[in-house]
Image (tube, rainbow, N blue to C red; front, side, top):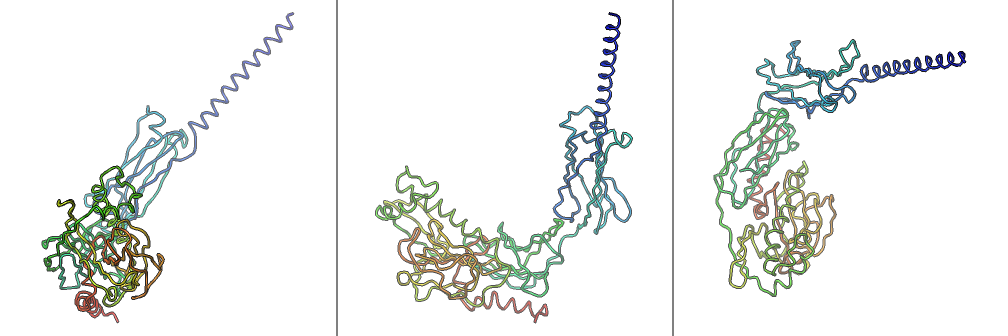
Length: 463
């Protein structure tokens, strides 16, 4: 009996000892895994490129999911001098979620810090709340090379005369003092990108630009260049802007015409099927026209960096002009004015399904259906200049195909919002439709494009 009690007492001691051992080992393991974890935090910096201007804010993120972030530190080093930019310790008592991630901003005022233009080194470190490393925590450390640039780029305009009519185009040639992420011509909110590569000197750029048909002749116009650090340089240039008078015409909309054209647009997104025919027409003539113009112009910012064309542009052979550029149209139904729109191209009529030649050499940028314009082909002639061929009955080219001047690209037709077989021919630069008549004129090409290019080539010493 006593032997049994002794045995049970002995077993209980062993059990108690085992439990205590497990608890001690578990606590030790917990300390090693949780409190003494050895994984360093991670640090990321939002720096697109190494160039920074006079005042810069660099966003960053430090993350440690295991024990949380305890301390952040950042400094910039130039010529052996270290300037502390950020030093912050986070108090205990935060939730695990709060401690796990810290967003931070590094403010750099290079002038106050006494930093000069040139190379510098940014150092950032983060420590977590681990008990490792003698309770100082695990440390993450990164370095980023920076280039401090506080000077605005210099712009030198190399062309002298820039005579532009409302709805017309111009060419400017300029030289920049440094590489820029953005540069071109600003015309009252419209920005026309400049292109390098035509001249041997890579710092010389050319930019075609347009003046909208309704742009006033007091337009604010200048070359703008933004360098890689974000510094902006601007330079005005001599320009003479001429007023133009555009034709006005009245178009009568009949029920018969509505019955003919409306069915072809009923599958268009947003078409007001439950509205009266006149309101359906207004949707097509106003809302859809605006969207279609935007769709055509969307290619303008992605032009080829090359000169594909030469000489005057060709018009549809043996054709009669049926409508001009920027004709101001008033639409009348049942004796009342229902709409006013502007025609941003030239309508040319020849024989039915006449072959349509490319006006000049270039790369076919788009082939497809565009609402009121029907079957459309656009050609990129390089350096921001495009031509448009609309209402085609059929097309004969593919996107990306290089075509020569006068090569047949399609045939005239009456697709889209067209009253009869004809070609709607247009031209645009960036996001502005311009008057094609100028580009058909050899004298205008010579005076406004060719002579300028030759003059700068001679000035620059290009062969």
